[in-house]
Image (cartoon, rainbow, N blue to C red; front, top):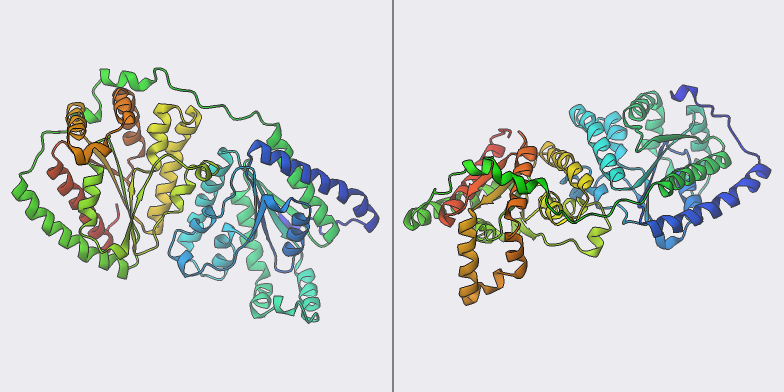
Length: 497
């Protein structure tokens, strides 16, 4: 592909002066329109060393409102970044709706420099193609504009520019041993680039190859490409507003047997046995926490369940056995204004634990498939798409080496009523019961339909659900801790899901 690129393309100074200023004004106008429309824009610059990425980014920035964009220069990952899934540092830098993020190098480093310099095992960089496509598709499906540039120059042109930079006392720092080493590896990099373009140029995030020998030509083509992408995005119909679900299919689920009806909620445990087993499990988990820290294994424990299902008590017994320096509990409530301005998974990626640490989610990303679906806070297209997105998200975590334990705390409708009434009567428990809890209870059948779909469609070999029989709190707490202990032991012994 790249051998067919015409690197002689150029613009004269006169042609450039005539066309470039109107393009900048148009881009500035489209930036304002994209902001009003709430369209996030992601511009990625990749290319050969000395191909002119910095110059193009400066030119792009000079034509934009500085309040509406941020440039992210990407270098080799630091220690903190290496201890997270490799896409984590890019998720945390994503732009809010209506703003622009400009990446000077990007997530493609894994399939370029990390591949060619053998910094990453082949299994990892090959898997990265799939994860990158998933990442970009998720962003595009949420309305993001993704523009990706590969700045192309010949090996001869690169050498010429290196020598010129070395003669400049202010710029010679840009060319060192590593740059000359990469220059000698031009053919190896060329193969990696070709494969990258082939695998990751998609309809929702296509690559644009810029013939970068002539800088004026490069600037014009860059600006025209971004303009075209923004114009196309602004022509799309506005996303449909979520509709309140009047009588969704969840109403009908109670008429047939589902997996929830097969859960034996009569399972119980006496207090004496509970106390003994709890003490033993908490001792185990304390030791395991330190072992997973030494081995640098990240652990995520996700709790979902019915209101009054026992999540809080369950989490408390789990954390009582942990060193507080090694874990964090993330309570998930309705998204904030900032969180609503990003992809719905953004706020969960932010809390992915560093390798060797534990994060416990009190409610999770499954809110999209439960409360957001049932209450009509997202469209049907959004929650239907979320099954795939969540499975992709969890597969990426597990591929990184994360222990992922997911609990659904199940109780009967009758037990929920008993606990609600108890909370209203007991003074120190009154804060736990709200009007919203009673309102949600009236939609039990709708929520049950959503729960059944969630369990069936997101219980995978790599991230299975554990349904906890929760009518007896003692039994539920012991089962949950036993599940966590087993998962951590399996990880330490090198056993997969």
